[in-house]
Amino acid sequence: MGIEKIAFTDNVLADNGKRLRELSITNPTTQIKAIHADAPGFIALLRKTDSGVYQRHYKAEVIADSLDEWITYDSYFSMNTFYTPKRLITNLKEIRTAFVDIDCQNTIFTAEQIEAQLKADYFGQSIPTPNLIIHSGRGLNLIWLMDSISGLAVERWNRLQKAIFNSVKTLGADPKAVDAARVFRLAGSINSKNNAIVSCEILHDYRYGLEEMAEEYFPDILKVVKKPKKNQRPNKINTKKPKAGEKVNGGIRRLFNEYTLRKTRMGDLNKLVNLRNGHMEGSREYALFLYRYWALVQSESKEDAVEAMLELNTTFKTPLKEREAIADTKSAERYYDSEEPFRITNERVIEWLDITKEEQRHLLTIIDKAEKRSRNTEYQRTKRGSVTKEEYKAEKSSQKAHKLKQLATLLKERPMATQKELAAELGVSVPSIKKYTSEIRREG
Image (cartoon, rainbow, N blue to C red; front, side):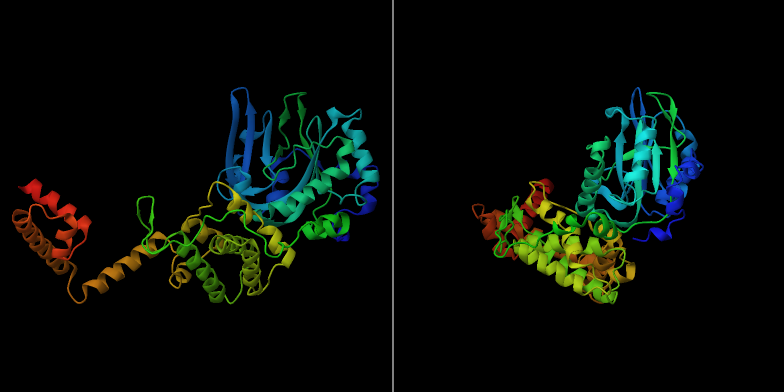
């Protein structure tokens, strides 16, 4: 499966580990660079202290400048990267590794014995040969470098993690250390439990594809994804299109209510794909996830949402495989079924999809604040016509003064008239009558 591309041959791997041991490092820069070179997201660094947990986040291009302060007791770094400086599964930007944590304290064997058994009986046989082995002081962390995939593909990645864990669980693998936000010890740091210096063993530099690992070693996990059943009833049916004039939270829905907003955003995604001539590399998973979720809210049908998402996928120059597209966007249904609604700002969508200023000019709703201000300015200019802004304001002020004078007269002549009747008489809204009445009373 591409093992011939690795930096070190199978003969080296079988050489009792002698040559591999020469590649053992305690340099955290080399360790992090091996995993996160050119990573676009944030990398978490964490330290456990007597007073609690201290955590910071860095981009790959600057993290090396800050590592000296982390070469101390109980320092860790994240295996994957995050969209913002928050180490949360829901904030995953890229998944760059697969891994397993073997806690030798839970076995009768030493770390050296378990490592020898792994190299002799497991690597290249029941599991791929890992790229790195971190010697944590009380165990081993096996790490596989992967072609980066979107954080939205976490459910598909979880199946790979579970398969790897099951393959080595008899050796003391920790079932709790399989989440995508996991941190492992930093090379050169010290394990306070036994004062051991953490080292990292580098075996090779080949990056595996998720599908590649699954097809050769864990083919069963590829059979997990199933299409929704026909006529499947949605679990949630309260996201209906509002009736005209329907009040929500005490007020009339705006032009872009939750239903129409998502429908229009779906149209914007279609438009974006057209603008790019189908070239959506780097943002395919995000676009498909958003489209599936918005389609689900609009149609209330999980089956229809999947079909709509797959149709969008076919418009990409390089579409995802159908099973990948379904698996990578499965979380859309989880958000839909949850009690907490999924909300995302335009700014986040623009960042996810890397939408340019020029592209925003062609979209209806997925625009930033600057574009929104620009459109409002143009709208106001068109509304004013050929008059200047100052002339327009003066005219509006004059019209308001006239309405106030009319209302003051009506209030004297017809003190029992309702606000609705007064509004109809003056040709304004009831809220305007309330506002004008307050002004008249303050001035009177």
